[in-house]
Amino acid sequence: MAAVCEKNSTLAKKIEKDMIYCISKTMEISACHNLKLSYESKCSRLHGHNWEVTVYCAATELNADGMVIDFKHVKELIHGRLDHGNLNELLPFNPTAENIAAWIVREVKPCYKALVKESYGNVAMATDDTFPIDQRYLI
Image (cartoon, rainbow, N blue to C red; front, side):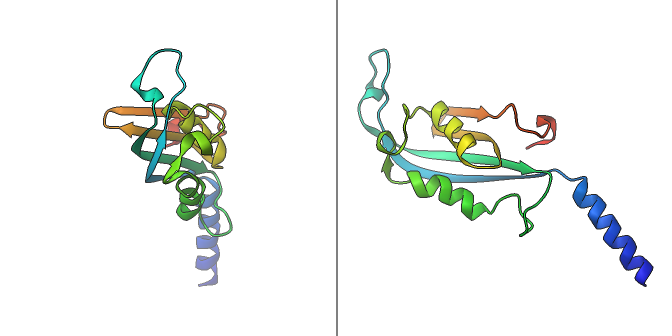
C-alpha cells in the first residue's frame, strides 16, 4: 500500500510540474468616458458603456492555495476599481478599449491577454507577447 501511495504522490508531482494552468474571468463594468481624439467624433463627449471584460491568466505552478490567481482578486483589481466610475478620472491615459486592455494585462499578474468589449461588435484585445509561456498552449 505504501508503494502505491508513493507512486501516486510521485505521479501527482510530475503531473503538477508538467502542467500549464489557464483561467479566464469575465465581468461587466458599467463606466463612462470621453475620448480625446485627433478628429471630430461624438465619442469626445462623455458617454457610458456596459463593458464586457475578459481577463486571461496562466502559470506553470499554482500558488499556495492551488490557484493561478483567485477569480475574486481579478475582479477586485479591475471591476473594483472601474465599475460605476469615470474612466478619464480613474485611469492615467486616454481610455480607449485598446488602452484599457493593455492596462489590464499590465495590472493583473499573471495576465497575458485581455479582451475589452465596449459595445456589440466592438472588441479590443491586448496580449503580452513576452509572457513566458508559449501562446500556443494558452486559452
